[in-house]
Length: 284
Image (cartoon, rainbow, N blue to C red; front, side):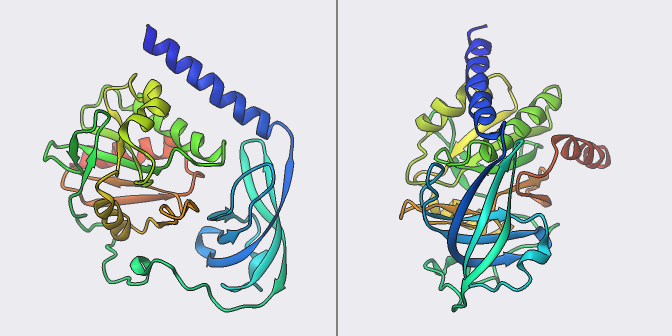
């Protein structure tokens, strides 16, 4: 009963934050340099200056409603655009190129080599992380479980994006609550800040209600986190510089750590994963 009350309180606070931010359409002016363009995902990654009233300077992906708006933009360009926040949806529009420039040199060469990236259907290497009480846990323990893995960090400055991923995980944890073959795991890639205690202080009231929902820390296991990300196409950067950026991914692994599916951003629906995974489970 106490856990339910804690979760209800936590959920009310997060919803209140989201509603305050998103009830009305809010427009933020953003200035930055284009780091990458992912046209297939309608996404532009920008190393932006601080956005007053919203977030610190960082590198992050922005969803673009109309991809034609950025057809004339290249990595390295200085841009000015509007960041729209409305009805739990965010997107970028009204792009202006302030200056043409050279492509940003990646400060972390970890992402420059693509030869280690795996493909759907490949088996992902095992990795070690920390569970809620700081004990080492394996990505796979040969327990016959399918794993839905979302990458998060507690310092996320966007009060609708990160809770959206948490809410989708909560939906899936509930949907598979009676299925002992599916686990939901949220792994923080912020190995500098997100200790097991910090993660449990923030997410514990939610995950403790479900026997199949976990939150793991990559603290002390940053190399395992980087290796998992490298293999699956999840990108993050700036953890040690306190200018965190990432491309937001949720992946599905089978009991043998075979990479089955990737869901991009926070646009996916929990029901889609539930239906698709149920079909896969029936085949196994």
